[in-house]
Image: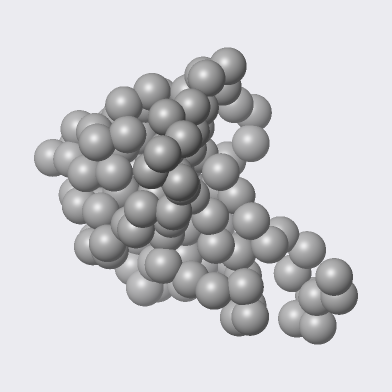
Length: 129
């Protein structure tokens, strides 16, 4: 599959232990609706997808609850693009997560915040203002 935009990331998965809790967290922080993606008759995997499509720039992905894949402890951090990361950061703790690094400047590359979701996964928030 050729990526004409130059972004090599086309998909991500964030493993969770409690799908309802994690879904509520991401919907609250990012003010989006996650959709059921997995086969409801297959109880071994439950997936809720973030908005997006495979045609546009950037990556789409899902929350995944799957036997054998525990949440948290990953050494990969996914950064979510925001208009102003302080907005999403302000929703993290009320949604059950924890801000581990408040909004900080990264010079000419904008600003970022780091948080933990309800499952112990580290996520980043990035904005240019």
